[in-house]
Image 1 (cartoon, rainbow, N blue to C red):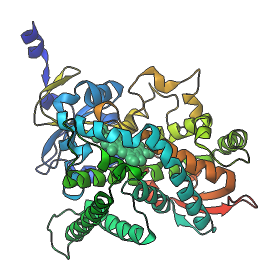
Image 2 (cartoon, rainbow, N blue to C red):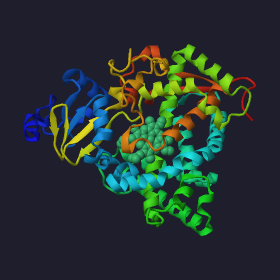
Image 3 (tube, protein in one colour):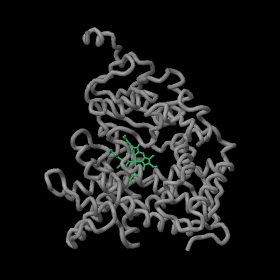
Image 4 (cartoon, helix red, strand yellow):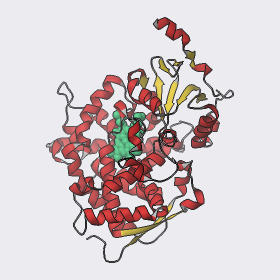
Amino acid sequence: MVLQQRAQLKSAEEMPGSFGGSKGETEELFSGEEMFYRQRLERYGSIFKSRIFGKKFAFLIGPEANRLVLKDKADCLSAGQGWVFLKPIFGTGLLLQDGKQHKATRKLMHPAMHGQALNNYFATIDEISQDFLSEKATGETLGAIDSFTEFSVTVALRLIIGVETPEEFGEALKHFLTMLVGRRARIHIDLPFTLYGRSQGARRKLKAFLQKKIDKRRKNGDLGASQDFLGLFLASVTENGEPLSDTEIIDQLLMVLFAGHENPAVLISWLLFELDANPAWKERLLNEQAEVVGDEPLQLSHLKQMTQLGYALKEVERLYPPVQNISRGVLEDIEYDGYRIPKGWMVDVSPLLTHRLPELYADPDRFDPDRFAPPREEDKQHPFALVGFGSGPHVCLGYQFAQMEMKIFMSLLLRNYDWKIAPEKSAIAPVYEPSKVQEDLEVSLHALAESVPE
Ligand code: HEM
């Protein structure tokens, strides 16, 4: 019976789509990723094949595909192969681990991103948000992503790798930013005058910086006392009661730093963009801030009460997911919708395209946060309809951290500042290529009279 069913399965080679010429479709993909996927979805439907960097890919679009790839068949798939391009720069941290190794690391990291640890981070994020906003609210026009990334990188450097002084901050920031540039390097030659070489040099310096911090903390003892990810991680032990090696800790820190440094800034930028175009929603969020926080200093307990802000954040996660596509390497054959996808292929699911499917979301290009409120709750029709933070074993470890960070920042901004953002939505909507548009978003911030927090 099983044999008969297998015989009826079609080969993945028979999927609609094209493997392209001798170089596959790599050039087409890099000339505009979002349109590459969108056009193929329109042309071929929700399953199509391609060949990128010499690898055969099955692109599977929609909530059932998300369920299969992110959760049900996660054991047959490799996140390490999907994120392999990060390896030379960020090493083999959590995101690139698979199976038992991944499970064990995640268990170790979990306490540093949840529960009491998260509560302890509140005051630092609040302080960084206040400092950032008062410094930037000059009315000057700034690149939105770049400046909000300055904020989220500051949060990450302070709370993840535990920088303590302005000197440490300056040093770590310089190395981290130079290291990041290596992502754009097409040729990986480690010489001082190549892009990749400069990035590798910065990676070595950042690793040395982290080693020095680890040595200092170990020497001072009382590892768990510091209220940051590094401290909690240094104090944790494996199932065998062993502490983690320094190399392992450094690799993991670099990975969390990478995962947490930019995405909150992307969602904050898009939220400001949408609120500018939707004044009724801006008003609603301002009223919510007045009701929940009023003139009190912001407290952790307020954040849970910001339901409308929660819906608005979900709506920008849906429309502009910073992680637009998630790829995995196939370790064991899997089946999907009548096709057998063999070992050695790659599979790819798309939060971006799933989130714009009209069968899941009414009028999907429209900013309409009420779609998440009862009774509509459109995301609840399918457990894999909203996957901006992933799902399954690799679901974003920093989900609660990110929500807290974005809510604190937005609460302070809404209560004490106003902004202008360009270009206007009416000039460019609907935005089908968020990654291109976001590079050009410009923002200016202004303090509201007599309301800047002390
Ligand atoms: C708005 C912000 C964020 C978005 C949209 C986001 C999205 C994601 C997604 C989609 C994944 C899953 C990737 C996959 O399945 O291959 C992921 C994983 C991860 N994220 Fe986030 N993230 C955000 C913020 C953060 C922050 C602030 C941190 C840390 C402070 C963080 C830490 C991580 C880590 C460590 C993983 C790897 C989990 C694993 O492999 O088990 N993220 N994130």
